[in-house]
Length: 430
Image 1 (cartoon, rainbow, N blue to C red):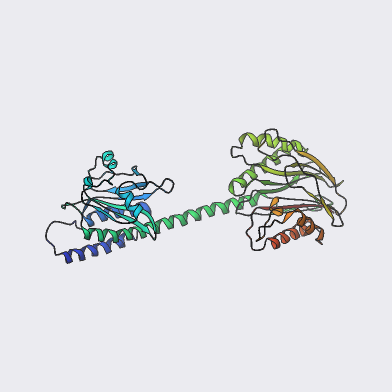
Image 2 (image 1 turned 120 degrees about the vertical axis):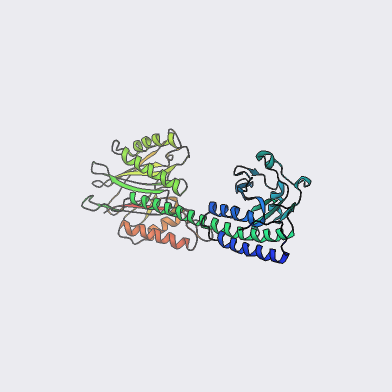
């Protein structure tokens, strides 16, 4: 690609040649796959095409609004990657602010000129053209050409060509930025999918059989609001013939809540090997969670232990929703609740309670994703409706009861978006 010279060329011929080179240049930059190679191609090819000593591209820092010189190219032009120009300052800032091309024949006579860049780099700017890079009504940056070669200043024809070229640059930048954003979203989604699969993998899905625990029917389900849940259910043998079970709810949802949930579950399981009392287990777990909890996340929880021989449930309440005691007839009532969550109080207190289950009676625990589920009118499902749903259920097993409740909640919510994770556990003495 040849530089412009001072040899006489008929204006129409020169314009035709310039646009021919511009079309070829458009094809080259349109094939670039990433931002760095695109910027290099633009700067490498456009400077000799327009006949300028240097070319720079300024892109906006979305956080600060400043314009950053991503690249500069020219035989005597320094690399200016670290230079930042405040929003609206200088000719470049005005071009972005007004979304219009600006040509300056002598910058020493233009009060808008931001001389700090020249002072910082030692470069001497004489004349320039600054063209906004527009994406519809949005300006994403500015391309600037400095000091025309063998001419005192740029002219109107340069303005016209640079304005057209800027539109090609904008289209290429938007394409690459969109591709990069799509790749980033895909990576985030893959990470979320992996986190979800890992979380699902640590939740028990094989429930106790009669051969393992006579007179016991247990079932639980977790329905996350996002890919990764902050809710938790678990159950595991105590080693003395009893069965530990729990439901917990981490404040918030998403990856951070899911990670905190996984840590809490691991600590509970390991601590239960040494201690058999639910309150003591939670106290020991809290002592480990509290000092390392810089994010101030917390878990409301009910941790219980069931004796299948006697039907006795002994449980610790840690600021969680009240459990439901369901009689064989289907009538039910809420248990007392209290205690403090895990993780946020150095000396958190937990309330001990117990309930004897007769034949056909059920201990039912859940997270507030049930009672706080909202329909399209933003009305909550509520504790009264949960109690009515359970009393009207004709279920003959823990699984049927859990599914009846979940189905009723989904029907109530309708087309409204699920606002929180939902977890339910039913333990029935058969």
